[in-house]
Image (cartoon, rainbow, N blue to C red; front, side, top):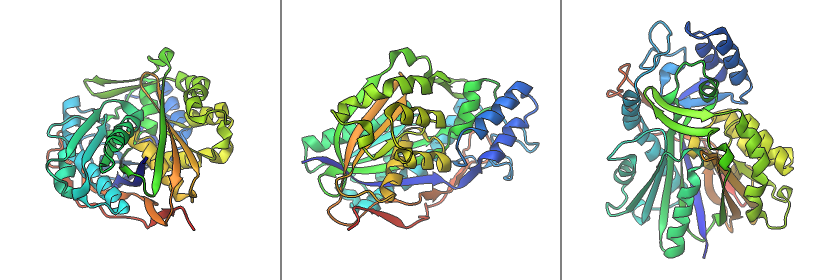
Length: 403
C-alpha cells in the first residue's frame, strides 16, 4: 500500500498581467529613483515570466483604479491589516475552486474525504478557508482539518508528508491538500532590490491534490529535507507594516547550485540525476532553475514543466510545485516513469520528493488549464466589498499513462 496523489486541481484569479505592462507601471512611479528604474527593467525583463495572475485588477494599467493604484496611476501601499482584509475575502474562492477541480478530476465524492490539509503563507484569518472548502464542497463537518501557515514556497511538501502519513496509518483515509497564495497582495514600490525582484516574479494561484492509498496517479515513494544554514539570511519572510516582506538575495541561486546535489542524493541512491527524465522544480526564478539544471547535470528538457509554469504563472509560492507536477503530467508521462520534485523555502530549506507515475488505466489526473476565479477587490483598501463568482473550467483534462 502506497500513498498516491490521485489528482491535481488548479485555479487562478481572472486578471492576467502582462509582464511588460507591469514593468512599465512600476518604472513610471514618480518616487522611483533612476537606479531603481534600471533595476526594475533588468529584473522584469530577465525574469523569464510572460504572464501572471492577480486578485488585484488594478495592477493591470488598463483596468480601473483600486486599493493599490489610484486614478492618477500612482501605486498605493495599504497597511498590512488592509492587505490581510483583502486576503480574508479573496483567498477562499481560490481554495474552493482548486479543491473542487481536484475532486472532480479524481472522481472523488466530497463526503469520502477524511482529512483536509490547507497551506498558505500570504495571509491569516480564522475561521479559515479550510471551513469554506468543507462547507462549499459538501465535506463532512467532522472532517479532520490541519493548516500549515507561513512556511513559504516549500510548504506543499510538509503538507504532502502529512497526507502520506495519514494514508499510511489508515488505508481508508482520503486526504485533500489545498495550497493557495495571494502573493500580489504584498507588492509595493521600493528601491530595495529584493522587493523589486519579488514584484517581478510573484503571482497568485491555488492548487489542490487528492491523496489516497494506491490507485492511478503519482505514487509517493519518499521524501527528503535539507537545510542550508548559511543561507538563513538570504531567503526570509517577515511581516512589515506595509505587507509581508520577502528577502530573496542574489546569493540564493548560487547556494542552491552548491547544495541541491546533496539535498536530492538520498532520493537518487547510486543513480545519476540525469537518469530521472522529469524534474518538477519550484520555479522561484529563472536563475534558480538554471543553477539547479547545471548543478545536477540535467538535460535542457528535464525542467520543461518548471519553465512553462514560470513563464505562464510566475512564482505562486507553495502552490507552484503542484502546478509544475500538473504540467509534467500533461506532457505525457508513462506508467512507471520516475519524477523528482523539489522546492526551496526560508531556512534555507530544500524539500524533495521521489514520485512514480502509477497509471494502469487512462486517468484524468491534472488540468491542461486552470479554473479561473473572478474575485475583484473594491477600491477601498479593506476590500470589504470584494465580489466573487463560481469558477469556470477553461480547458480540457489531460491524461497520464496513455495506452
